[in-house]
Length: 369
Image (cartoon, rainbow, N blue to C red):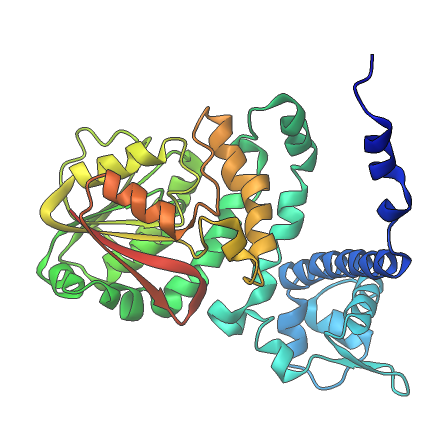
């Protein structure tokens, strides 16, 4: 027998519960905007991957045929892509001459020459994450997670993203965030990178500080192969890469410095990893943890323009890869407050949170025992 009262039914279905038509239309318009923006994101990703933005940046107003020739691509595809870029307001189009141009202000955030300001590279995340939608939908019903192996190009894309910032700022701006670290690296110390991926950051440090020794840990053999290949190409003899679950650093020795670049929040056992870092630091050692800038309180994230992206990346990657390993599922938006608390619980009594102008999306945690 139903326990719903007539009053309850009236409350849910009566005139007072009818939606406001004007607000319905306004919200529908917002969703169409989301659809349009998502479609544009996909086209921007294609423009980056095909080199079309880089080709356009060096051209005067040009026809689709000229642009296709410059980029070495098929004109029919380029013309349709230019149509999408025109209606999105990314390139300009002169109907009288049939020419297109990429404004310099747009090129400043869409080309590889833009370095860390290149947002076209970041928009590659949209099609990458869409590839695992079916698997994530299954997890909503069945639990568990999506394994790293399901993400084609993930290490490649993350390496590209981090390289843009690290090439521009790691040695000259990130290292100086940690008092005394540059001098320590110059004198010679032992450094570990947790979840090093393709190892570009560690190779940059090894090249800049030849008197120090560097070791990168990751559980992706494919990523480590790329890291070792770059080290060989650069002629580095003071860096090595080891296949390892960083929740267990037994036998790794002690370190004067440990780094982790956007690697802690998607660990299966992040608390254990932080404890292992603290346990393997020298008494006066330092842990530099780079991770997403956000609050642990959902309501405090409402005013972050890219917060929907952070929660999407968490759902579609960072949280689910952890859950696939029966992990904590901490997620991308674990937030500054929880990060500081977990660092304290791991044994770090001195933690400073810093920022870098070149990196709007991350915080830099300088932690000592």
